[in-house]
Length: 112
Length: 424
View 1: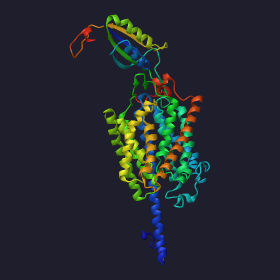
View 2: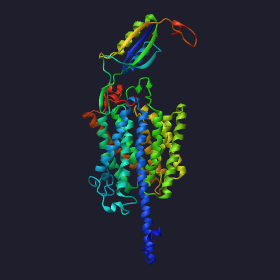
View 3: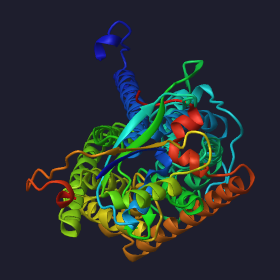
């Protein structure tokens, strides 16, 4: 099993969510995150001073999938999360050692 | 008060009586005038109420924008009302007509500061009416929130407060043709609230709904940033309404002002209860936002008749306004008319209801004739305001643009239009 972490634009979140539902990914976790990097953050003004806020708001999605579904899910995110401009985000894939459903105690693929 | 005059008390009893009467009249004038000024300050607080309500009902990425609009509307509203609005609405000429203009600026004579003018001074009259005028545009700002361009909105609001509101206001309160016909609207269910509602409707038709509100799978509610802020806003509006309706008595008449306080509050309370039950039967939920809108619906509903209905009637008017709210909000959503704060339901629909309620519950001799007078008032003011607003919004749309682009809408107007965040 794999864990996919995708850091995507806030503006693309609804599209990505819908397309994931479309290919049968029924649950995932997400959290609002801030990044810092080459891309500038939002220009902010406060009481006359204009400055780079430095924070780049993004959404981090975490999806657990069976190995054979990995490519399909990654491709979907690539397709719908892309605007072709700097700052479209990153996808990280890692191996999952153990995956357990708390309610039943089922583990790994049974818990999906 | 006779003590004051004791040293120069004339021998003639008639003169004593005359002096006493003058003194009493002056005291009465002072009290009346003071009440109008207090009422003006209370109506001012309604702008804080609208600001809080609208800030609570929009998403956190648009809070700076809505507060900015509210801060500018009250300011632009007061200035334009001083420049032309007051003299368009109360021209003092062309009684029974459609239009009059008393000239630019504020130019009172010394008599205008005495009881010869009214139960209050010219300045009190101006500031009380000016506070009213700006509320009309504030109603619009909530409905078009989260997607209208800031400058486009400000252009609209300026023209609306400076021209449209005073012209239709003159038809009734400036002794125009509706007044001569017998149309009755005590404190402005139609003249203030429906007028704001019609303009809001024109705006949301031309703007279209916020992104993601109406999807193929149905309505996806866009929840507000702060229910506590919305609740504070509604309570402040209720508080301000004591001045809005109470001040519209236009003097400190003990019986009338206290009656108006009572009918106003009971209608607001009944509006909450009406919305609570209606919403519960429709959705089996206890939706705070509906109850808050219900309170406002009750207040708007009683505004046309707060001085001329019984307590029982006030409660019935409020309850029906409250029941209207969930039905109307759902109906606007079905028609895909997106109104983030429910301004069209509260101000337009309940404003129409309140104006009709005058004929049903008010003590007017004319009966069915009054009903047709009310209907003519609603339709004529509605037609003028909607046409004016639609035209202005449309011209703005084809010239400077009305709506922010998709990316700006996603990122929020706070960052895109103001480069600011409401909460950091």
